Image 1 (cartoon, rainbow, N blue to C red):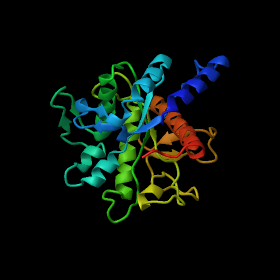
Image 2 (spheres, one colour):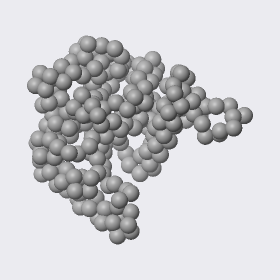
Image 3 (tube, rainbow, N blue to C red):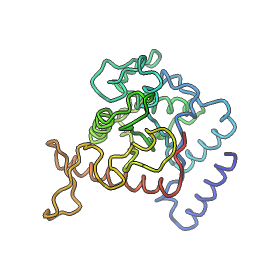
Image 4 (spheres, rainbow, N blue to C red):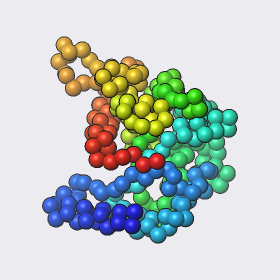
Length: 266
C-alpha cells in the first residue's frame, strides 16, 4: 500500500514521456470500506489507518486531474440488514428515500448516497474538486441461504433501473449537474470463483454466453444492416440508443481489463 502512489507516479511519468498523459489517466479503484462512516453522506470520512496514504493519493489525483474510483455495492448493505434497509431504496425503485440531516439533500437511492459520502470524505481532506466515479456496482442473481436479496428478480431490477438513470445522465444530489459515471459488474458469471454463491452470480450472461436475465438490451438479428447496433426494449430515442451503446462498450472494455489485470478489492 505504501508504494501505491509511487507506482502511479511512475506510470504517469512514463505516459507523459510518451506524450500520452493527456489521453490516459492513472488512478485505482477503492472499496467502499475505505470509509469509516458513510451514513449520512455528509458524515463521510476515511478510515483512520489510511491517514498516512490518502492525502498523497488524493494530491496525485488532483494534480493529474484523474478521478477517484469507488466500488459501491448497495446489495451488501441490504444483505447485512434486510430489516433495516428498504429494498426499494437500494434497487432504485420509487420510495420516500432519506434526507441528510445536515445538508438537507434528498436521496432516493443508496448508490448516490454512497458516492456523496466519498465526496464528503475527500472534501474533508481538502480536495473538493475531485470527481468520483463508480468503478464497480452490481447485484447477484443467486446467493446462499444467508445472502438475503440475492435473487434473479432483484438483480434485474437493480441493473435495469441503474441503466435507465445512466441514460438520463443523472448526477448525485451533491453534484446534480455532473453526470455520475458508473461501470456495471459484471458481464459474465464467474462460475469457477471461490467464496459465497453470490460471488459467482453477478453476470448479465452465463459462461456459455446464454443470458442470465434481460436488462433491456436486445441484439438485432443477424440480418440487420448494422451488426454493431444494440437497441433498447423500451421506446428510447436514437440519442439514448447511442449513449447506451457507448455505455455497454466501455462496460465491456472495463470488465475485460479487470478480469485480466486485477482482482476485485473487498
